[in-house]
Length: 174
Image (cartoon, rainbow, N blue to C red; front, side):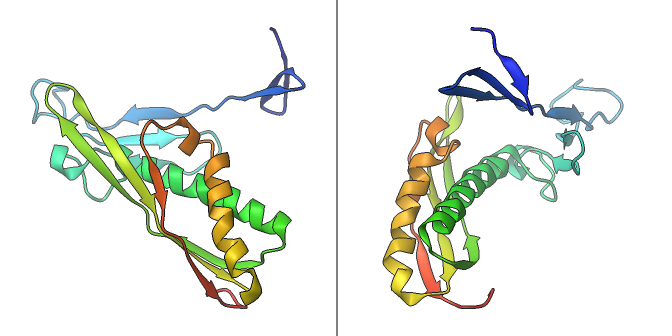
């Protein structure tokens, strides 16, 4: 069904919205001979979105990448973690839980499979949340479950995303 554009959201009907995203990836690792051989080129690239700072990318160092640049595996973890955080903060705001600080130490396991590359087998989010009111601790922990249910990125994955949340009382930003 054709829809109309409205502020970057394509509305096809009142029940269904489609959000479209654009990103460019530009390879910057040609050392002069292109991909003449496996060691002839760098894996460096730049991730570009209009009006935003560029993100320096490469492959994981174990695949000849530059350890000072972000690799796709780290960016996947960042996408999962930040999507969860944004939903969580929203749910806290509408539920009366005052969050004064949030930090996540996400980990992921990727398994190489012979002949087919590999895939992530799991991700664990370990958010530590600082809240202003101790009586809201149970609610603060429970909202992680709801945030997971709503997270667009987690809903798009074919591997489990686990949560090990922590909660501390801190009236000021840590």
